Image (cartoon, rainbow, N blue to C red; front, side, top):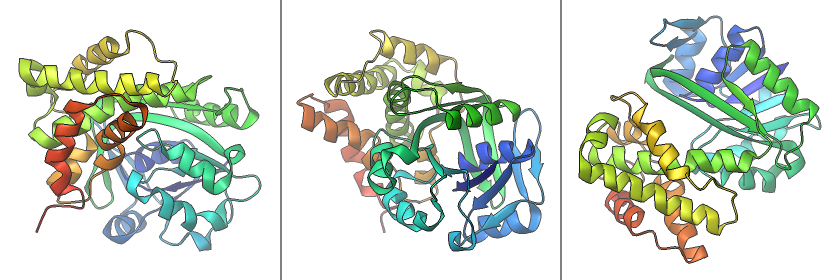
Length: 307
């Protein structure tokens, strides 16, 4: 199958790279030094289990040079969603399926508005990765997972085909019958992890073992879960406790990608992570004081390190 991965960073680079190594026809869309390095040296996935190299790697910085693929893996930062969706219009053909692999709970709706819901598969991924240098995506910790699914919960031919391709690539993938729940399960956790690791500049280890920060983390997730239920999402009753147990099993040195972005002086996704909890809380009448405080403290960094 032909796949275009728009975004060759921690998500698009990792999952697209694994699919390319398994024999799928994957083209990466990447710009600047990262794109140049992939073109010249290939895309390297630096993993604890051993590095993988996709070379030669198909890469472009201009989607207009591409023909419509079978699948467009949409793996850009949340703040770029609308802009990139418009850029990709020329390659979303009648048989192209757009797969959202982004953070947050609003990306699918945005893509629905651009392409129509019949073109869009919901998706959720989890992996601790970041661009450590141009052409290199580094994974911290060995875990990775992916869930994909039709928005109506049906088991479609296109979703099954992508699931099988991911399994062939050795990816931990689930074909979900309620992808909205899976997306929210990640969002509840990630909105807390992003705000907490970015604001404190600390990794999982000290955040978990310090009672005060552990309590803040739980409060962030409780607020997000309450907002999700108010939005009608069918979340498990024990979702917060389950996410806490999951957190305890993650690498002590892990931080959210938003923390990496903040440290690098880049724009951060706060507005559609913790900020979305606050905004959706206002819409649904759910108080979100913990996330509101954390977001307020991070606001000066929204567009990069303040000058």
